[in-house]
Length: 117
Image (tube, rainbow, N blue to C red; front, side, top):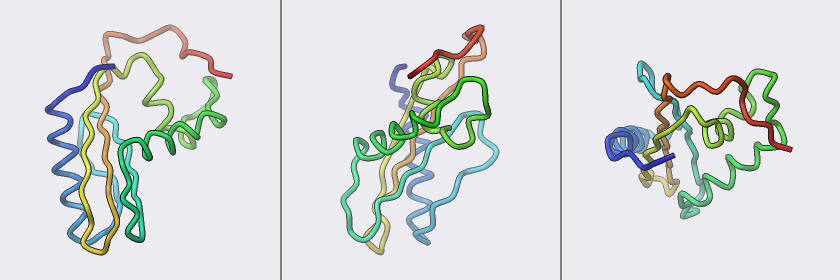
């Protein structure tokens, strides 16, 4: 996976838009996957905190089922997600939004997802 400035700019725009009303919500109509994280009550969350939280979904990851419960983790480990861009914005009430966007490379489709145990 490599860094993508265009995805990061889009993530920044979305994080900035959420800070207006301090409500976390997914964007719509995009051609990329998205992970959201919020640090509340004045907690100065960092990208590290978001990635650690998403990584904690690993125990829910099962390559044979829907990724609804572990989608954040799946985005980070599946090889067909090849680019990432993240951003952070502080909410007016003290919370912090972190958005990461992932580009899915349709040309790089493994026969089966990797197994993690």
